[in-house]
Image 1: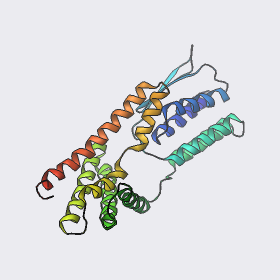
Image 2: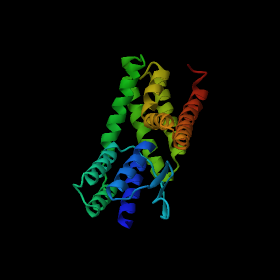
Image 3: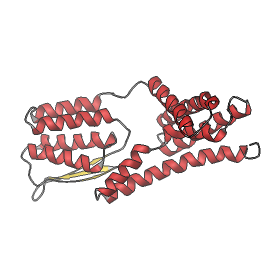
Length: 248
């Protein structure tokens, strides 16, 4: 029974840390518990912690969530383990070993590839927002540098919102210099394209989906986190625009 509980908690932790919706985490944990004959279990999942109870006369376990990123492949792998356990294709021992392997695996793309993807996305959004083609190189550079800054500042300080503020600041500086040096035309669209990789789109989507599913605690928590991220981005850009206001 202890191994089944450990497996449920580990699966839930991996999914929350990878950016899964709250209702999906609770559903996965419930299906894994039922597959092991644990009827009547209860789980309470938030972005910062998981409580899992065996029900009446059973113990309750708590697990803290410290880091959250976006890793859809890890969510898919955990779901795959859950389905195989429910279909009796895996034993609980094999499932736990597979979950531990997923937990220790580094499935994200290399940083250079993420940099290229962020840069291309920034240039694409610049065109999408009716920007000039001449501004695409500046938008690509701003978006790529912003992504690198948020990654390394977060690794250095472990303060997410400060890293996003500094990254937005760097996007604004690159756009400002591009226009000053006549390498770009429209500062606004360069900045808009450059900050798009920083925008918490998945977090906002999950907040809305959790609210619609009735998970108001998780929905409000994720919404507040998205708001703070948006505030950090806006503050960084506003800081740069306050200096450039007299020049453009």
